Image 1 (cartoon, one colour):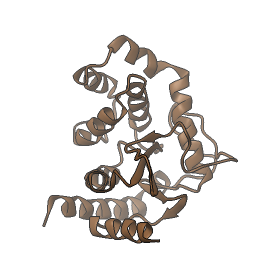
Image 2 (cartoon, helix red, strand yellow; image 1 turned 135 degrees about the horizontal axis):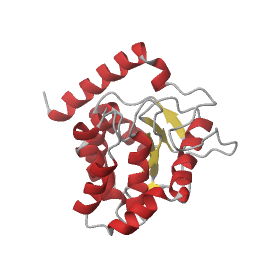
Image 3 (cartoon, rainbow, N blue to C red; image 1 turned 120 degrees about the horizontal axis):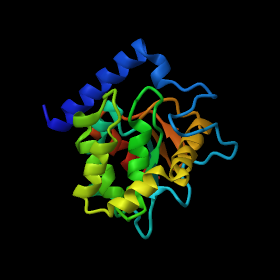
Image 4 (cartoon, rainbow, N blue to C red; image 1 turned 90 degrees about the vertical axis):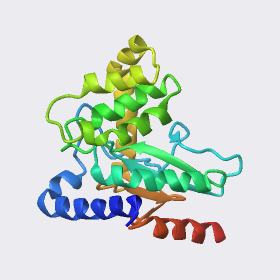
Length: 221
């Protein structure tokens, strides 16, 4: 069994078990809010905005795939290599977009989102996005704050740490995360990962092959 397939199997098991045991963690009620981000469903919710972070931005994009994600979510972590593989294959035709949707049951989910956003201010969103997912096992599910760990990642990426610290604590950064969360709530995103393909919410593909088939089908239209 390939590594990607193993990770997808793990994701399926995680989603099934958590949904059964901790439905309140995976499912948002309309009034739910992320830790540190005061978010309510956006009345004008959109799957993607001009300010959204694009992992690929082809000159003539034929399709847009948006993922609402939580960096601490194990299922998102399992989907990360799948999305990366698809991005390598279709990055010249498909626009891949990452949006924040930190779940309230994750101690460091919102902090991780602010970490990525703080890195984005120095032009390092993609690098921090990758760093957070590839190290998820080192910090995910912790009960204590992982701020120092994330600051270490910022140092590893060569960021200006003073600027990073300031951005991490800037209310504008929290509002930026809350904007994504509000859009997600307004679009009835109820767990992570949740994907939108050209504005339409789709069931999360259960395998790389299924996701590839979905993309090929939409590109053929």
